[in-house]
Image 1 (cartoon, rainbow, N blue to C red):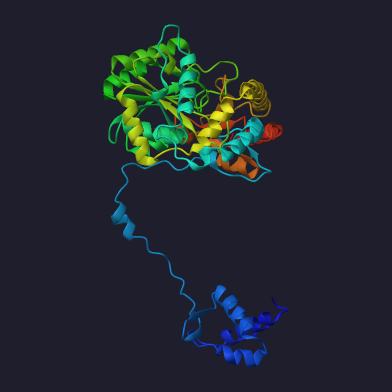
Image 2: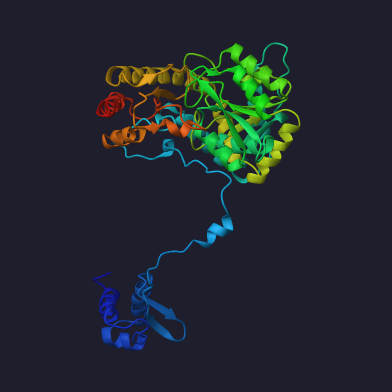
Length: 469
C-alpha cells in the first residue's frame, strides 16, 4: 500500500493524526482529494485503512475524527464473587496429561496414543463416506443411531457367559465421549451431596467429573491388581453409597487388571448393598497380554453400568462412547444426557460405526497389540537401565501407561521441573488421587510419539532423581 496513492494518503494522515488532539476532525474528503491529487474512491480507501488500524472513527453525515485512545485499566471482576458464591468443592485443575508440548520434547505425559497407532486410513475413508451420506444433514435419535447401539450391545453380549441374557440395543445410550458419560452417570445415579465410592488412585477425569457433579467421593485404596473386595464391601456398608466407579481392565493410571475372582467378589458386594458399579472400559481395545472381559458381561440384573469409549482406539476426533444400562437406570441416564447434549453428531456416530465394522478393524487391533507391547517393554527396559530408583510396581497387561513409584524423599514438583528443563515431559502422580497421595508417583505413557526417545526420557528421570539424593 505504501507505493500507491492510498498509501501516500495513509502515511500523510498518520503524521497529521500524531500531532492532533483526540476527537479532532480530519479534513473533508474534498480537501484531501485536492491536497493529494487523488480520486474520492482512493481517499475513502485510505480512511477505511486508518479506521481498521483504530486511528480514526467515521460519523456518518458529520465527518471523520481522530479516535481517542482508550485508557488501559485493570478489569474488575470482583462482582462475580457474590454472583457465583463459594464452590461446593475445590475442583481439580485440568491434568498435565492434556498439556501440549513442542515437537522436540520427549512426551511421556500424554493421555492419548500416538497417531501412528490409530487406524488413520479407516477413519479418513469413513469420514469421506459419512460426508456423502444422510448423516451429514440429519438429526439422529437421542439415544444414538440404532445400528451403533446394536454394535455396542452385541460386543458386550459376546463376552457374556453361556446362558446369560445379553443386553439389547435399547439398553445403550450413545454419548459424546467417556468424559461426558462419567458426568452423566454420576449425576443420574448418585446425585449431588451423595457418596460415590472411587478407586484411589484413579482416572483424573473421573475425579474432575465427580467434583463438577457435586458428589461426595469416598476413596477406596486400589493397588496394581485392583481394590480389596472386602474394603469395597466395608465402604458400601459404612457410607450407604449406591455406586462404585471402577476400571476393571487396565486401569488408568495403575494398569491394574482385575482377576475373575476379584471381579466376582466386587460384583457380589454391589448386589448385597443394592448398588451400581460404574465400569469405565476406556481401554477395551488396548489389550496386550490379557483380554478385556467387561464386568458388565457377568451381570444380568442391571448392577453394572458399562461405559465403552472409542476415542482412544479409533481417533481423538471421534468422541463417541456407548453407555449400557438396564432398567430404569438407563432412562435416568438418557434424561441426564439430554440435559447436557441433545444428541451426538450423526456424522461422528456414522464414522465410528463404519470403522469398527470394517474387516480391517480386527486386523488393526491385532497389530496395535504388538506395537503397544513393544513400546511398553522398551520404556520398562529404559527405566530399569537409566532410572532404577523409579520402580514399576507391576508391568501392565494393557492400556497406555506405566505407574512408577519414586523414593519417599523425592520432591515431586522439583523432579517434574527438572525433567521439563531437560526436554522431557512427565505427569506427576498426585493428579490421580481423589484424596491425599500415598507417595510420589509418575504416570508415564508408553504409547505417545517418538518411542526412540524413551532412553533419553529415562536418563532425564534418573538424573533428576540423582540430584535429590
